[in-house]
Image (cartoon, rainbow, N blue to C red; front, side, top):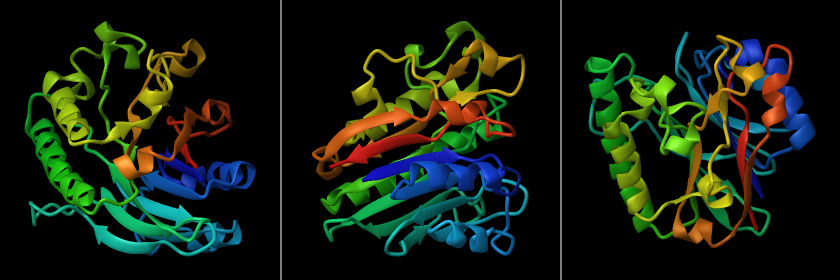
Length: 261
């Protein structure tokens, strides 16, 4: 079972690339982020025609998350995180999906706040959001189910997760507070699947559009798939479909995936 996280950076602009990816790779589940689309303008018909069911949580112009699945439709469990009633950002969507064996799997599509510029209100919001995510993650672990928390975490967790520590040193993605919050999340019992597969790092999931970052392979890893112990027991492989970043009018993120037995 292949589960993908894919920040599409605008689903209307990247729809040909998304449909292309779904057709070529045929993941069982795809968690999308940064739709930049309202609920009303989400391209449901095109995704259905590609053979996928979808649940989405849109927001006009920015944010937005979705869960796509082949076979049985995903069943929504929760949209948004509790803890800040005034927070209307579309950044979290949790669904249940059926597996080929007839069991079910919980997946969450996550678009964590960027937090720049830091210090400041945006960085404070990022840290609060991470604490709210940790609270939800703790509750999911208590269910003792197969769970995958998939998304753009906007956290460079280790020095070897970036092409240049010096270049990113002042960025919100790599501040000690961001890293500590991510490590506290892992310490609950989650497995960072891509790190498990590539313990030496130097595997990127994002390349900026600026300064020839793609051409120089000046990227970093911010897209993560965290597995509960029950899902980690079935972990077979994890990777990045890097070549899709090099296609015409591609997202600045590459699809990142985990395969479960």
